[in-house]
Length: 368
Ligand code: ASP
Image 1 (cartoon, rainbow, N blue to C red):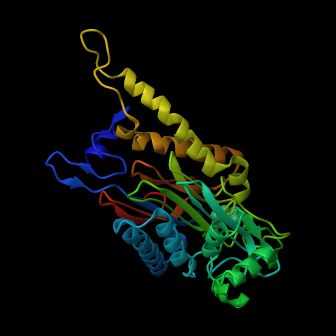
Image 2: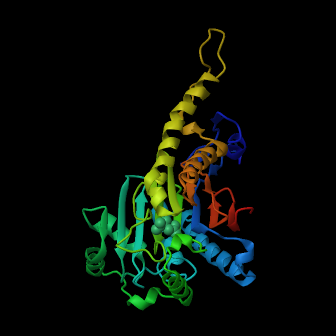
């Protein structure tokens, strides 16, 4: 709590610890921080377009996924495990455009994209244009852990999935009546999905665990009516997904082409990473001097953080650039200092966050 109050000050000095357990003033051990943020897509999510039943259903699905992830983190599990399990839960829910419920391509097939990144060593795995695997995030993870590569695509990736023994499904597994209706509408009008009134529905999770490790993952069916093997930002490390213990974890959702052009996920992390030493210097300059004009103490990195407002500003600045370019959507973030949050320029974003400070909330509309 002290940390959060202090985070309102800039520059911010921390009295408590960042990631490791520390002794509190009363001599007891303080628990190390953890945090998680999730999304289920951003887009034209207005109150008048969602029935009360759907609203309840979506919130329950988000809360279920968030609880799965936060329970893992609470118990001292890893950010990678929390992100993976959270995304599996969202992929299995037909309300979202990932795994079951993925949107259809122009040819009425499903081509799924997914990626995952471990901020502790910058290892990553991604798959693009796959089908047959029940949970694409598990295939991205297998690429990271069991192949010498970062990204596999199409039939080769499908083959790798079978060789890895991942659960396989028939092509009709992903289909839902709603998604069929959407593709029929796109095909009938011969217009692109970008012109259809829809919400994106991609899923993602970012987390920091009690050991201070960060992870990010994203999974999607892409855009309705996509063709020619189109691949969006979601499986691209640096665009849709990025995690680095030194700065942040990001998962994006929205009009992928724009996210790729700005390298959104990496861009936000890079700005945080570069802002940190600068803010440290500012803090050192603010340290009171003794009678001889020397600093009375040295600001140590482990006692320092960027404030909530600074993190939000960096994320908002990058999303503003996305908007200026013509892109729609948003991101979720987690930082090494326990913050978890969002930034988006659409009417709404399916989202949720939980932290060791007691936060646990889900939201849909922009004004929540
Ligand atoms: N970003 C995804 C894509 O462009 C779509 C989404 O977020 O729903 O494939």
